[in-house]
Length: 380
Image (cartoon, rainbow, N blue to C red; front, side, top):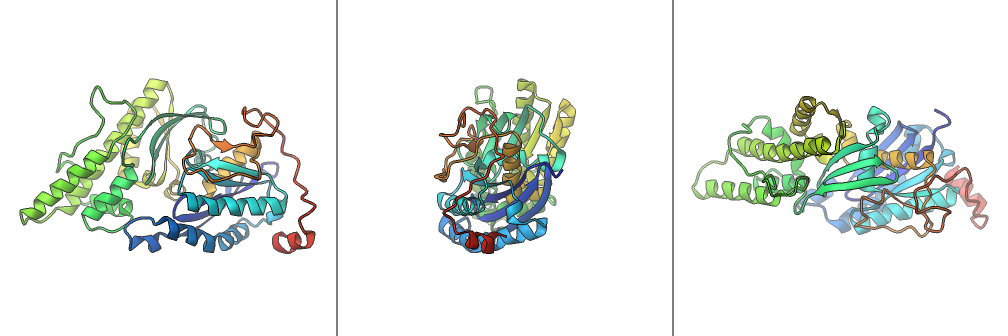
């Protein structure tokens, strides 16, 4: 284990400041500072509020992670950070912090993809990812089906949402039902008391001529909202539990059905589910049943690793180091629309950096012009 790469990961793509420390496939620390309470009164994430919260939480969260892991910053073999996709301002805070720490410590910097990180985090729970792995990523911003022959260099999008993401739909329906923000956890809880077959809500993009692997939840969201509005207009009580259960059933039915179909079509025997909505209990139960019926091995990390966290970024960073992938350049920037086909952002000037071939990272950056006393005081 001592020979495995020790990497610190920073995640700031949305409203949670996550810092994780991983050695190989072993999680040593997972520190998170969430600003969700600050956004709740607005009914959704406010980018400027998120960015300010990241600034305030960054250094204390890094220090907490180092203490939890029982390592010094100087022991690290690399710094990984989410370079995209995500909120531009929030991403910039994380990228700037990672560059500062990596530069001062003389460690390689790895700008990695948020979505690929959600896949790679499962290595901390269930060991090395099979190659290829099919991944269903569902969150407030993404609903994607991805085929990953090599999580560090080859991730292929098969399908994605054409409108609302699944998590976004949960938040909007929770708002319609006056359940607060975020909507996913509260709908999951209330739905357990309801009947999932009570209301026949539509399943988007499931017709014979529809895209096999794409998702659409906008029509479902509208159908639920109109159903609720009709009940209220008639002076009738809205059965919140039944609406929640029926809505949730429509979402997870489509997600799991399309994911299993993709596995069968591609001849892949493993399905990994990640992202914040992967913490949904009904999604997990239905995926487990359908995968078992189809002879597919299901891999779902524990709920804490499904939501945004620094551990997933550190996991992908450690894999980059282990496989000798090229580090990022010092002018690394945040890319709010970084495509999942770019699992990381290599230095374009590095020898073979853009072609995915292995590189050696046994060196460190000396940075002689950095004041050695300051480095010692700050990062010893």
